Image (tube, rainbow, N blue to C red; front, top):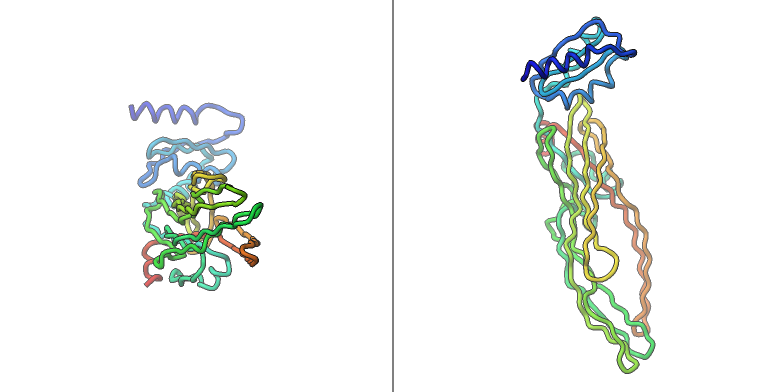
Length: 291
């Protein structure tokens, strides 16, 4: 069976084609990485006359004789044993990241967006009274656990997939509002939904550069009543240097609210800048830096 597979690979490369004018064919045995992982990395580097195929831990190259040695050298560089890596994720604004420094020992910024699952405090409800008056309902505050940190680190083997999760508890109104005898009544009721926002990461090292496949996973409170959770998934890829912060994305918000209750009026203005950054280091070097 193994001979049959190899024969099929060789026959596929040997078939004539108008753009393949190679004069030598060579079988390369791989030691650490399968052909399916190396072929996408090698193809952009091959000369125009070369062709490449493979299966399992075997590569078959058809190329001009002068290019075979160079291709073998490229394969040797890429066919390395997977390394242990340290993936660091920072959640906050660019200013927070600069203020914390590029070192792994980032400090906690009180009031910033923190990684980890938060715990919300009790909310507070109020009601209006006279005929035709609108009922006001406001949440007093929410609170995160004191153990939350804006930085997460995890150790992962190169080529393996790991999951990083962040999240928070979101309050929503679960009481009731009704009118009776010309008055508007509000029955207090606040519940909380834990929403998870995370992503899967799969890092691959290419020399001094790293390619990270990202598959985000997001839960959010859906519009309307009942605390329904929406879930979204997507995928992307980022590339950068080892030890360099890479921005995955984020959001900037500006919100202004006003409320009136018992003759008093309050106005609040909020601005937010929440971004997600990722950094990949060789585990040994990164561990030494963190000490």
